[in-house]
Length: 87
Image 1: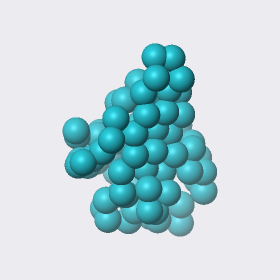
Image 2: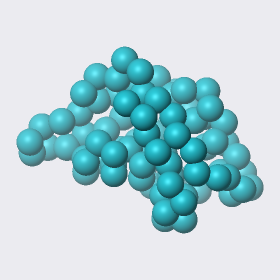
Image 3: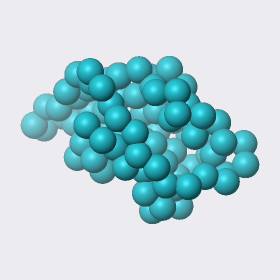
Image 4: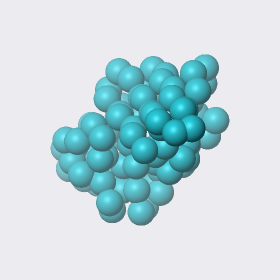
């Protein structure tokens, strides 16, 4: 699945927050879930009712984006694929 991190996701994001960063915002929006967490190693998402959850390894370009965002905030919207994600 292609995940699009939009300008809105970036503007609403919080630096140094794995649950409120632009990538987590995009995961919540794209998977229509209540909870998402993005770390340099793993992406996770979850919704209680109806139950929906998944996870995958963080793609390198996403980890690089998160590092740039946390350190200087100068990032642009982008897309990435979650391949082999459990849902």
